[in-house]
Image (cartoon, rainbow, N blue to C red; front, side):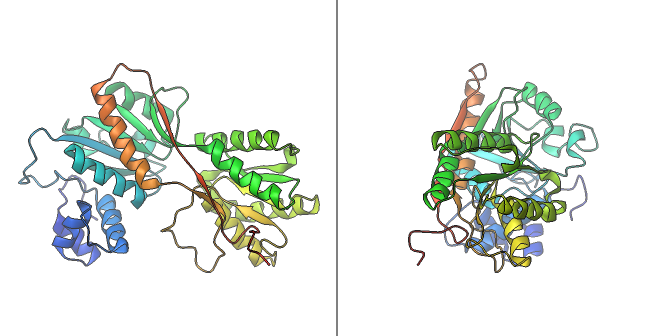
Length: 345
């Protein structure tokens, strides 16, 4: 780990990842000829070290280059988002700065001891938010800088959101389950504090209404998504109890929930999809899940999400008084192994 306040260079990333400095440079600039796993490793280490293209004082910044801060909370910035952001930054002559905050420190991001270096030095022209930030922090940030949020909406703080078409995606999953005879379909992963969870739950209800499928409160399982690892056993308990009531098709609010559920159900000797069918939402192709069956889910072009988020931020910087916009990218159906398919014998 680089000590707080010290600059991070390509050589630091190279040492941590065990690849050549030239490879690091090419990966960060999104140039061709880099193995996807190597690019992901470099981007992840760059974020963890707090690298930005201007951390080295002797670097030459292109004339007119603007500086954008990518703020991520809780988890690392997905490499697919980073690839899209990087590609857009090259086209737009923008320098990207990355800052990661933990769930415990994100509430005090603007305190002097936690303030990102690029903000402290007043380099930033705009901010992109990744994952769910505290509403108070978002309110303060967006009052000072043009701000775009990836996926998460903040009802009390109007700002641009680069989101996902939850309605179309959930409809495709519910319709798929119904086509294989599921007349009762549950929803696993409602967390009222998370905007995308609320939106996906609302889209699930809309799909049930459109397809004339009954809904009941015992079809819905609330979870604390900030402590998902502690919820696994309860998730499986709820699904098994639902199976006894005839609920044998379940839509999970995201893929991480879906894989955790499948792992626990299989451990308990529940067959998937023979005993119960499970879907996720927003698959992450580069995330490995061991020997678990591939989850039926939705495909989202996450690289395009990152690319369009930076494009929208540049637009907002040029039109600061315009009304906030929500831009939705499609979520298309993806057939996995956790639900029946037309090819299933």
